[in-house]
Image (tube, rainbow, N blue to C red):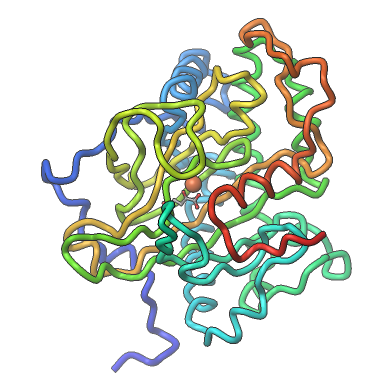
Length: 357
Ligand SMILES: O=C(O)CCC(=O)C(=O)O
Ligand SMILES: [Fe+2]
């Protein structure tokens, strides 16, 4: 008999492959090499620009560079932290719900409405603030569970690497669009407080063959760019890219296509802030998560996501660049990022967020 300490429900080495069947139509995504982007390979820069103007989703091959290796190894270690936290009794987990209009902390199963009739989601997640992980304990602004505090340096390294990778991509995109890269850098300084976080998500195994439940409802990410690690199918993108869909439902005809996890790669996607900065030249792809398909559905599904977001007090508005069509808001001050993120989260049907400052 294995000891309790040996038990782990996050066991990527045991997962069956994504089913090879027409029943589960997949999306074709470009695979971009992190090493080539670091080397300023101009063909790779053109490819990533195309991917971000198109669907706004691509695979990023991580192996080799230090930051990529940190994400590859760190995501598995963080998933195990997630497993330990999610196994705690509910009352323990509920001590860490968000406060003050922020999204950090625990979201229980069912806290998000997934459609206009009020059906609830079926995944739980924990958002770990980048800023609290990269400062000494006495400068942290929230209490964190012991499971996370024990691994604070892991979260700090992971946050720095994921943030760095996100900024590398944004720097390429800014140059392609003739936007002054400083406009992007100054809005994403890692030491300044931002909504950036590492999200640890657990979705339960699939209950029925029909896969009726929604683990994470249809949405576009709110921030600038997202670095996602997952090991089991479940993520789907809407087949048609849309730059102005409302919060929950796609507004253009299409279908959900599966995004198959790809070994050694992160799935990277742009968020609504990148759309705002570029007046819709870049795309924030609509996506959702349902239980894993076929045999994969017997396992609980973990994903580790890093959201790069504009710093709290920066302003969201269209930036100037030769590749950016002029917009009405270019000479305005713009809305504060913290308020924008809060508004977006509320529009998505979140009921667990504290609406008071
Ligand atoms: O779990 C996943 O694969 C994606 C999760 C996601 O889209 C999100 O948390 O915003
Ligand atoms: Fe997302």
